[in-house]
Length: 268
Image (cartoon, rainbow, N blue to C red):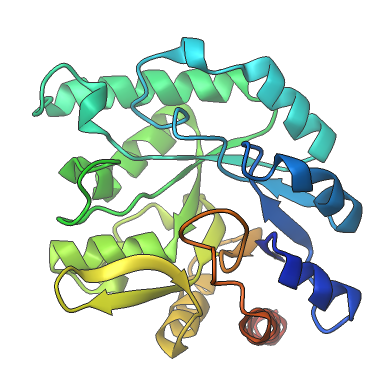
């Protein structure tokens, strides 16, 4: 299993000082990160993740997607896989309450097209559902593991399992995290995303990309016993995004990466 981390200036400093190591750096190829791609590529192998909001599982306009450009970047950066957020946005449909069959048909068409067009294997990532999201995956089916069973079986896809996203969905579904995760086809998980969440007094569990806590490390170990994971990505730190700005504490990056490597080495 390889371990990677979000690109950040702080991560680069730790790598240069040899205080941590990573097998790869996770970075997006959108406008936010475009000026950092060469530095990242010269430092470590790259995992491309997130190519912009248009790339979502219920998108209705493929004309916005330049697959040639995306594949050029994936090949140049030698990313082993790429993941698409499996979120269901009501605005992608003609009505505010699309039927189950309509949603499933859209999901299959979109994911099939992405799998066909991409030059690397496609994984689908679970997206958080909660009552505090005004848009972006606010349909309740976003959080249903049944979707992943059907799409993985029909299209032979892998899963990027985001533990922070799962914590949000489990909380708002009234389930324990472990019982919720066991509903997914865990044999399809190729990558884990890990970071810390926050328990807001008003909204409950929120995905904030904070430092991991003991419960997060415990669930990582629990999942490693149940999944044949190839990649484990620490989604802490970064550049230019609300969820990462101000959350690239260099000491926290060092603590988390060293702990994750210790877990990996102990479980070999």
